Image (cartoon, rainbow, N blue to C red; front, top):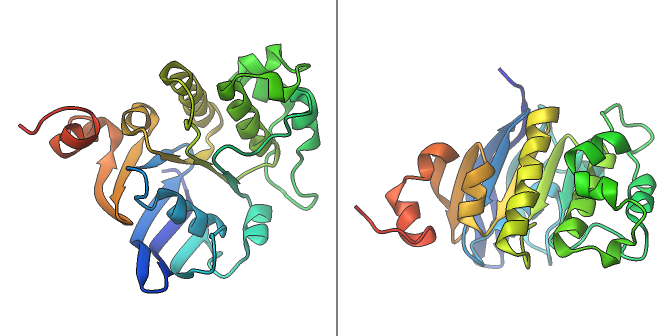
Length: 244
């Protein structure tokens, strides 16, 4: 069985008396893509921010986060990143004025990291569009291709777990499908553990191994994505279906 890469247990995030995330738990193994999905304001980004150590404002964060068996709950975001918890925030992650190749060449893992770094030829195999446009200024690319550059830069940093926060925001459905297929191919070919945060529940179900559907900071439905695609609770609210 694949080893656990990331384990979050009873993670709670409070802003004063408000619980933005309320006791969420999750496990991600090698070669697994786990999706956290839900509507706007459900607490998705707050949860992954707490996992990565990047919390907006000054919340109270409790619970336990383990990376490859090591408790990292008390570590800063910078320390977690050096250990391989790599977060690609919504709409960020690449230098617009640089070429694609310059963006990727500049990104390197920490000098003391013993983890696997992804070489340029591997990245261009996963994202063929970037190979074809490696000499192009990143800011001139399509939104989907810029998002691919952001993901590729993260891979150059040798992540243990890659966290993608709302990568589909602002992209056309066809581009979203292409981007997430590339992420799925990455998981299947390299064995990387990926945590995908996605408002588009249908898109998340199409690529994930497991889905956590959250509302108001709590997991309300959890299970294998292939099974949840037919769950009437999800179909009625998020996929345009109706209850049986």
